[in-house]
Image 1 (cartoon, rainbow, N blue to C red):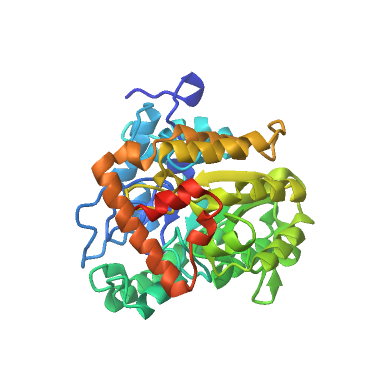
Image 2 (cartoon, one colour):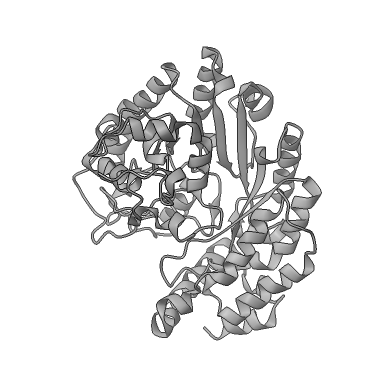
Length: 441
């Protein structure tokens, strides 16, 4: 078998399948949170392709069963040979952002790349163990962000059930009997394998993401266990959090927890300031969020520790300059990705706009910012340019499918406005062309 290391020109290699494991709130195992794969139980929000997405017979492998499964071996074999695989399209084609997830794993685990090749046979079986965990123990979350959904937010799920939406008898993961089976697997297997890794001092990295991970009791008990075992100074704690609260279960995230760890990074989810931010992220109280960020800022020792994690949405386009100014004021880096748009009806994506309107909005923001690129703004600058370089929905799907998607997407957003007592057109009034485009859908 041909093996090509990154230093020898392998551009597709990623360390994730040698060190990292991901589990969704529905107990679906994946390569990582950005991988595009076929679901094994029911359709996930990041599926690449799944014709059914439904199964009464749950496939719930343990971590040990999954880690050197035929599937994982085939992935490693292809990546060692420098092949492009469909699971990695998000990174290969920068579908989400310009600074791709692969860079994190190859940078953090650079010292183990040679080990990965040495400890993996020609079939793809590896002797390396998982040291990086992204286990999303539940969809528990206090927000119902408009670009999210019930699989990642209990608030979304509760809202759907309140208004008779969600079709949970058809979408089997939400069915009561299936939920009970998933919970049993979570309690008896997932928590066990996770805590065993902690107790064996195998953890090098936690990635806490949800749902809202700070609401999970297991987050606090796991972090405290690492502290008690005396190896927090060797563990990197990484977060995506809405930062609506930083105190839970009698502990403060910074005072009682992160001060003990070797390093940490918080990507604080925020997509616009003030009223537009509160519109996009239902549940957000912007002033409280800002106070928490300013408190976190006191503990920052280097720029990567605290970052504003901006997901550009259609309404968020109208607050990009304010987001940039907030980043400058706080001296906190501003990341920049866009809403996933794997179907033509995702109108929360800025890519739903016609090319000329989108480019004009982005160019206007670019022209107002005269600062030179630096560690605080580089990802934002790259993200803006990526919006102009990436295919719009109209370019990707063609006129007929594009128009059909617009109508379906607008209907969904107007439904949310109705039940949440909001009005997206108030935001669009800042741009006559966008308001006219929206009105004419």
